[in-house]
Image (cartoon, rainbow over all chains, first blue to last red; front, side):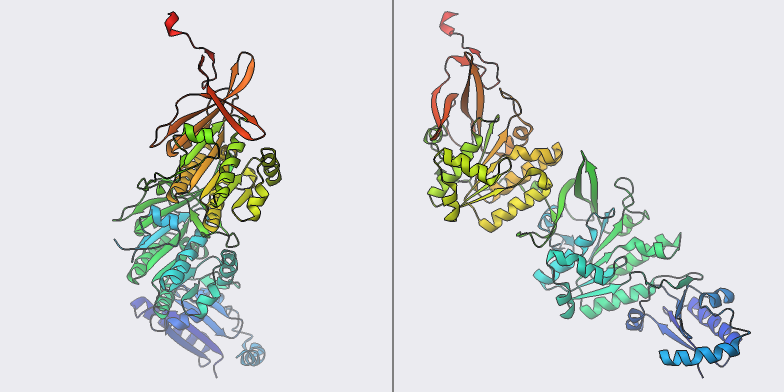
Length: 110
Length: 494
């Protein structure tokens, strides 16, 4: 069950891009194991998706779910800052309570 | 070098044909000087006149704002978008603004979108408005310069002719705010919006045009709404060097409306000449202008009269006191009178309005009474530019023109206007008051008559209910024109 849907817009396959993807996977594995999906989109290959989401900078990480949508720009150096930017920092302990509230709401939104 | 028309006739003129094809041109200017209008007009002109599609990248205003703002110029933006001729890339700030910056980034996302829009639209022209503002949103500090250079370099590789606007923080000093814009672009145009002698003055200057010729110096420009009955809308540049001295000249003469004056001029004015009538207030300038258009209308010439000193009804009333019925000429469509208050507009707007009237009405003769009334609304420099631009336009159109100017002093003297206009006019007629033997009398002389013999004497004239009656020369006096009249010393007595 995907509870966390994250889309990462990158440009090309540079070492920095690979490192950004790896950082994001590590954060997700650590915090939301088994509950997340990451979509990586290369703007050079899919400019129409970049247009749709009005992407200017790369990398841009969009947290589609749970709502509200949040964006983080830049190479994701610091895990704590990334979570804060996505509004996900304090979800650890009260996870169960949030589950009940957040999931149906996101499904409605979809 | 091949160039693309900008859609602004005056700008095409000073750039010797427009923007160099396949290159980037930076247009730098402070807020509110008309950058966005020029950026849109560049695309609209390509679509309307050359079938060249365009892409507009907007960083500040939303596409909706731009559609609404340029609607006043009569450009059918939405229609072009529907037909796939124009595509917006919306890079305006997200209303939510919920973005956090963590670590380094670049603008590849933007470049991918621009490249996509360019290929999808098959764009020939690209406008970016305004480049620097993206760096305000992302506090990227030192990397702004590097990114800016990268964006411009990538745009060059897209094979389009691009116009990129940039914000200037002040009217003087650096070309644009990041200090690198002018080095990465091939060409640089600066727009200025300054306050001189309490008048707003907008000018455009081509600072650099790599490998291509252009005119030097600042040229005035203005913005004209599409509701005005004009051939020019939007961004209108007034080129001073439009004056080409290769006009063919004619030997056909027309009447000034006064038989004696025609004789003094050697048989009348040339049909394509610009005549300046200079005189103090009350010397009969308006009368001469009125006679000139009435005579034209009598001969089925189309005549246009601009009055900047009197209202329409005053003009009609004065004319009727000299036995001229202006209303009947207007009713028959031979004459159009436009009376405007000089202060109602800026000088640039007056010039554009005069040109528009000429384009629409297509006159054979024009009278402007008086040109000097317009020097109240401008600086001396602005007025000189106006006078040159106007007279060169009249000559280009080969319209018989009579311009009046008012001298500030009653006796003798000349006006600022005379100095600026006299070299570009073909003929000059002076009307002067003369104080002779305790009486104010009037004198007329033809100072210059290009390409023709003329009477060089200074004659006395009267104004009665038929108009201007020219009499005998003042033979016994000197110093009439300078205003210091004295008896002519008899050479035989010396």
